[in-house]
Length: 72
Image (cartoon, rainbow, N blue to C red; front, side, top):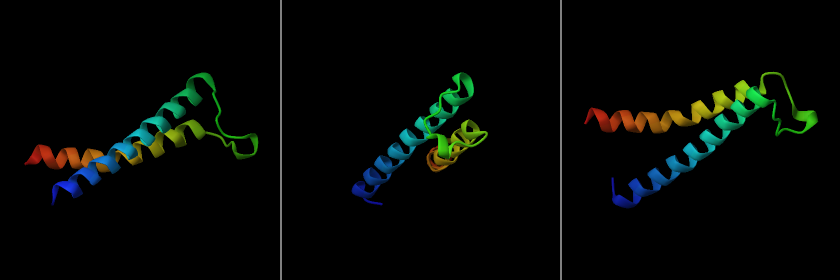
């Protein structure tokens, strides 16, 4: 893999991690202080848990890459 491809992969993973951590933070804020960022017509029960789960799913590719480097 060339250095350009590695750099592009790392940048994509950093963007995904940023989005994931934002979603996890918003989910925790929803659970702790009932902070809603969704409009009234889009709100649903357990939206905080859904945000946290979506954030955790977005972290999986980065965790797989870290695991790959540890095994080398």
